[in-house]
Length: 610
Image (cartoon, rainbow, N blue to C red; front, side, top):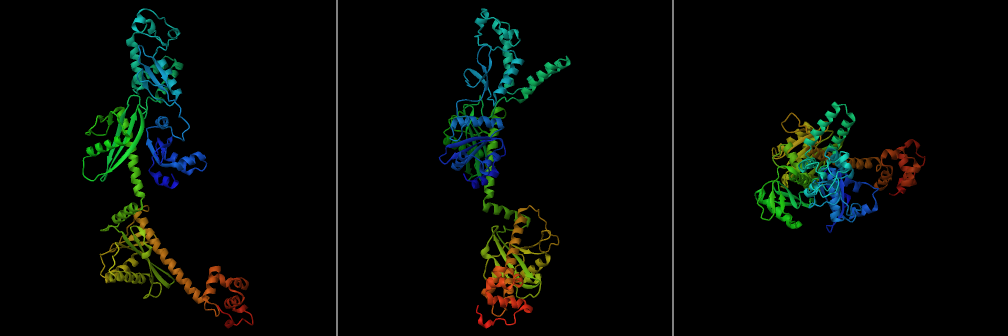
């Protein structure tokens, strides 16, 4: 992937936590990474110059880029871990072994134990997590141990063994960490009540537990047992900070497809996430053109069939945002709350960024962007049709000498330089901008009428109300009043004047309409000034240098190319002139500009040829 391609994609990337994948041309996953801010992280691959050579090779090999937005940075870490283990990307060097993140497990046994495990087995245990830090898990287990005294031994506490008096209490009982269920000192119902509260806490139902801790802390503080109250306060802080579960790695939601749907006037979009063994392993977005006014339920159902066919999904449950008729063996679920609703919301967020990226990419296309600006211009100027053909006039003169004018033409918001025209003012003497504008407007549109050429939708006059009135007078003579919209733009405050409206229009300085009008006006000014300068240079060349007897156009051109101006030639000494024009011509030029310093016997100009 080249930097140019990425820079087109960058504005549509979300500034949220997520996981990204660099995909090769053969659809193999080259690299999986996580990011707190996807846009900034991905931009670093194309802007930093100190990246390792291995990374540069990986970026060049990538054909496409995929990403998945998640709820938090921790979720990004978990999903990255699972995807690396699944795809084994060539350029990932971490997390490729068989290690995994820690879970909290409640074992399925009499008087269940609560343990930390890295090898989850849903047949033997109820799982909570995974967690991104072993330290967090151990703090949670320590907290549970203090709140709910549980056994830690691996004895088979069946009712028969307990009744037979086979076991005796251990040191944990005497330390207060266990209530002695092995010796029949704690009933199974009381023990299971503690397990129930632990389950609620690990599932995120912290209200009751938090309230109990707060009451306990208050009781200790009222009893002036501040050290113990401080310990309970730390337990409350641990309770607030630990992660009870992850959306992208879920212990109980397995083998499901989650779909989000969106449709515009002409397009329909479906984003799907496939969960296998509780892990988001695949995401893909489909797009289809809406040719008929079909119900969204039918379009969504069709796209889901196509999505599952492409990925080969055999998930037994599909989660959708609204009821659909699905001809398949999977169960259709429309969640209203809970973890499945959170997964659906996550799919909706990812679809939002996909659609946003498509829209921004379309807006960056030149034709779409130009149409958008022209539509805005049509609205701001109250035009009856889209201004795909715009013409602009500007005058240029120097103290009334060499008056010229210029016409620039924009088609579909872009300069059409083949249609640019210069005008030499014929009927005006002196610095009369109004009469000059009237002449060139009349000449331009008289010719278009004679040649049966199409007229522009918008004519822009560079100037104020005076130039606008002059242009309107010419159009009235030609019978074109009302057939084109005409306006003038004044440079000082960028006021835009319309016919028969005494008050100017002021557009926002950031308006795309004003920027386009300014661009057209500036282009007309540039074109007029450049032509006027060329004409002045030719006039100056003819009167100042070629009037010298013995100096022809070629010598004059060479001198101007070197010295840049006649003023510089006038100030040059004879030796400098001789290096360009030769000794004899240098004497002639120097004698012309310095008559008081000329030699007594100047060279005969008839002997000098150009």
